[in-house]
Image (cartoon, rainbow, N blue to C red; front, side):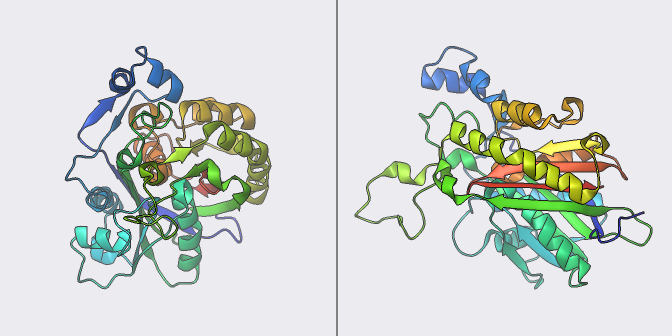
Amino acid sequence: MRDAGAPALRILGTGCHHPAHRVASTDFDTRLGLPPGSSEAATGVTERGVAADDETASAMAARAAEAALHAAGLDGRDLDAIVSTCAVMEQPIPCQAALVQRALGLGASGIPAFDLNATCLGFLVALDLVAAAIATGRWRRVLVVASEVPSRGLRADDPMTAPLFGDGAAAAVLGAAEAGDASALLAWRMETRADHAEACRIRGGGTRIAPGDPRNDDRDAYRFEMDGPATFRAAGRHMPRLLAQLLDTAGLALGDIDCVVPHQASGGGLDRIVRALRLPDARTVRILGRHGNQVAASLPHALHHAIDSGRLQRGQTCLLLGTGAGLSLGGAVLRY
């Protein structure tokens, strides 16, 4: 039975989309003049998908959403809302969720569509907000989708970020759990420590450094910048306490968790979080090697992989953990 007070949230279906074009890490070695194997050793990524020139984020999101709807046995018109959780939008206005709605052929449907941006933690934040809306009876079926094209916002000469990120999309249809269904959001927590806001950022593109501003000729202002070591140090200090609070709220011990789904930040980052938090390595999902860090699509893609591969089955518990620019840390415990 569901725990008293836990939101009755059920994952009805998940899906993902992988760009057809694949780029191996050895290509970056050649491009950057590095010894063969250097990029993979530094990032943990063997290959990743890269969107074609005419492949938009909203189109990829629609393909992932269609797969999730199919898995849920639903039609797009069964949805009560569409939430896009991308970190970097296809364009500033309108919101990306509106573009996804149109790409799904629902442009005249009137279904509410809006964006939620918590960078890499967008899916986690959406879980909590959607669960609250479902609990009040406002919505019953909500599509949450993340679609990212980081390959277009990286410095090509940066050996730490250029080989790390991959393009792709993932989606989940969330709904109310019926009577007798144990599916629930058992615990959720997020912290933001903006003293580290400069560790991961894109400085340009907003109103502070606007595109076309003649006062700015720094093209790198529009590229992703990351201080990986600073991010990992800050996360390492605060994540153990956040995990302890999550498990306490859920009324579970770490040994009770059947599947751990972390944000696929980097190979070194995954290794460090597994060691620092003493996570069960055999139960920890890793898809980084074949897909790279997909930003906001990382967590829902890894969750989809866990479900699709049978590593997470109905009635089992799942721990989702991650960090995002801000610096933010977050986690959730689900009974699937």
